[in-house]
Length: 234
Image (cartoon, rainbow, N blue to C red; front, side, top):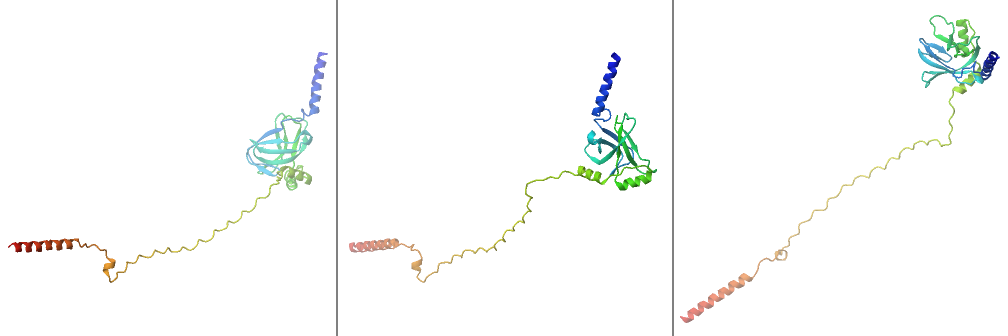
């Protein structure tokens, strides 16, 4: 009974996990892709380096894959894939390439995430898919018009709408009016010398005085009077 209970519990956990998709669907679903030579993926060619291949959809719609830089800041490709079941889930991330002619770039065929029994085939544009069929003699899934439109809508950035009025064109500056012509300043008229008249007594200041003349006359009169008095005594 103890063994039966253990087996029943394991089966119950397995069935519950399968119902949730934990067994066939890795919730992480991203893998590191390191290439030493150029590798073609739908829409672009990856240079040698390390990239992150990641499933961006849920289990219900597991068809879109992005290929980004190692830090996830740059997206190199966004592609649509087709499911590719396998009988044994790989323990590690596995990448399968087409058998291209020698000397040509590698072409990515299928990606298996760790512990996932359903791989993803990369779907190429119709022209490139037809060329790959001729080069590899393998079946290459081609992108349909519906898938192409869906991919374009995913890749296109959302339109930004705003109610703000569009900026007005800058108005040309109005040139300032031309400066008025400079008017030469007129020098004030030079003062004219006063005209001299014939009568100098009216224009010249009276600086002479009659006092010395009166004194001289008085002294002379005193001298004459003294002389006459002396002569009378004699």
